[in-house]
Length: 292
Image 1 (cartoon, helix red, strand yellow):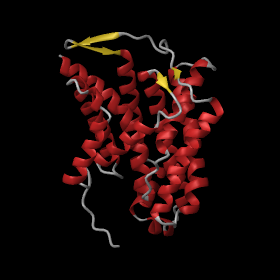
Image 2: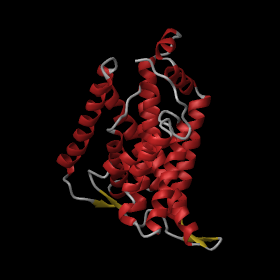
Image 3: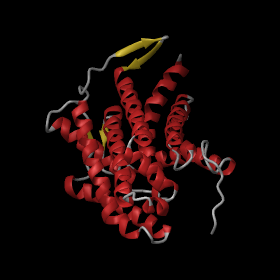
């Protein structure tokens, strides 16, 4: 029963990682950029959700929607201001810029509101325990998991059934050919950043509700873990990011349950090393030769 309990906790945590990882993998799939500022968009989403709940006195779902909208706007601004001028630059230049944007957001938040942590109210939703096959599942875990599943299904619908999604897949496959076919590549890339950042904002609110404590540097470790999840699943592959996030959350919970809680952050990077050694393309990826 203890194993099942940890499995449930791991799936809830993994669904948060999966939501963040989707932003990494979508952006990489389109413009081959690792957006290291993505973890800080997640942090901004957590704070916007917190202030929506405490200052505006809103419930969980209105706060979630406001956070998603604000983070989508922030994602588009980051892309237009920081990344668009470097679209034809070297990858290392874009990577250094991403790290710079990350630091700017972190310390900009500290400058605006200070470095002190905040705590999400515990009464956002009534906390109840549901007994299922002898395992006690909290209503919070179910809400987080349900929200994540709905958002992932919605993302799959957008990518596969909408005009924007088709444009995103075309740009991912061949940007120049997509441009020749009349697709507005700039708007498509902005839409990709908006969707990925909105999911990170939702993950921030879910994380705040799950762990209660939030602070301006909270995006570093979850952001890195979500990047690991994206690599584990196969960077650039949307279903891979979902599976990688869930898998990482379950592994973390099982490691904690086994009495190695001090290793719970380190195990993500052990998994990354093993994946890069034995399956560099990730679980869902294919080895593709690249001309240099």
